[in-house]
Length: 246
Length: 246
DNA sequence: TTGAATTTAGTGTCGGACACAAAGCGCGTG
DNA sequence: CACGCGCTTTGTGTCCGACACTAAATTCAA
Image 1 (cartoon, rainbow over the protein chains, first blue to last red):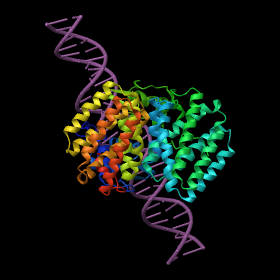
Image 2: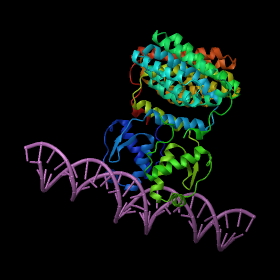
Image 3: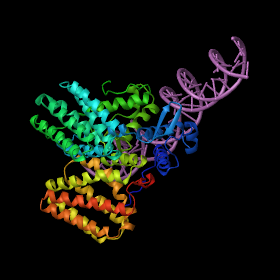
Image 4: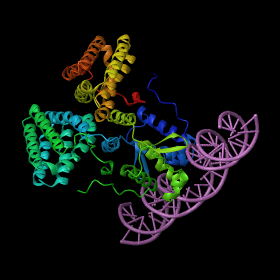
């Protein structure tokens, strides 16, 4: 059992470059927003060719540690949430997680999100949710649109809670689960109404700053989802074929 | 509002290559374990030079979609959990999340993990936990070692629950939070004992397959952690300077 | 037939080269 | 003197060709 330091398998130059720059960023030598030198200069610094350096840069880029606002400018970035969402979502899809797994976790995250939102959400944000909800009501029966609006509703709810960790953790999970609604809806048409009821009760609870009630309705909302999955016989089905992510 | 398809900003050849191969994997044309042709051949297929192709490969590699078991062999991989853990952990560290944020989420994940473990854990796994626990008892007072063992305990507990989504979501969060113990321990020496008590109660609950009790003790365990953070005055402190991730 | 020696193929790296676009510059005109 | 337009410079994306080194494949010997 060794300390969790860097694995020493770094004999490839491009890997060393990526590691070194990563270390500089994590160490704080380079801060988000800082601009990096041109490729030629960097290559010189590291004593490698541009080709080799570029391979290292590609790696950092796809790690989200650097990015190019303009083709001319290479700067240090803080990893963006949506990028992590994509990666996690892809991983979960490829490991063929089931509805049950997604649901079990969502049963925790969404109620917590609702609770925190009730505690920290601003009036403006609540109004925003309200108008989003209005759109949802108008879209009753339109599956794709409903799914997209639902994702949005829950994401905004989570953002209102002022907890970035929760936001990061729940996003890919909620995305996959809610998308499963596509397979459920045909079996349970009345779920549109129940969803609308739940959402409006959550909003009402937020206005009253009633964290308990918000949490309770969120829980019921997600429980409903599970009943739908059961009706559709999806409990242990794979949630999503990866291609749907694209 | 357009469908969530790929943004069309794919004028760079290396990007197109990465996207194309990614699509083939997601679409199922390529399955985990499949071997890919050599670089020369691939380059030919895509009509680019090896240099360009390699940049695309580096990107896929760091996305965890392909990897090289031997330098000679390039094959399709399913993204590994620890890779995602690193990425998420790094992101959270760079966005300077607070102890409070980490703790709020952990208050949900660990009790759920304990509950699921009580429902699905095998006798073997429980015995494994038991011996790990014995090590922890022996390490009382040794901070670094205690932290590492604690991380391990909770990770194994989560794995016992047969929920990969929970495992994926909680790992980076728990890692960051538990590591904060380093800053707490000096202020609250008796926490070693409370941790030992909590862990052994969880194990006992697992043996009885008492999900409620397991969940309860996990919750108390994490609550303790929060009290420690309060004593140390860390509630809204940044959990970790990124460098500690290395 | 099995093991050792040798060929072969493929990766990692190098160096140089060119087109194209953006950033910086100078110039002429109002 | 200020402003806009075209030119130069700089840097990225891509290509080409080459070579060392090592792991896999093949041949050869016992």
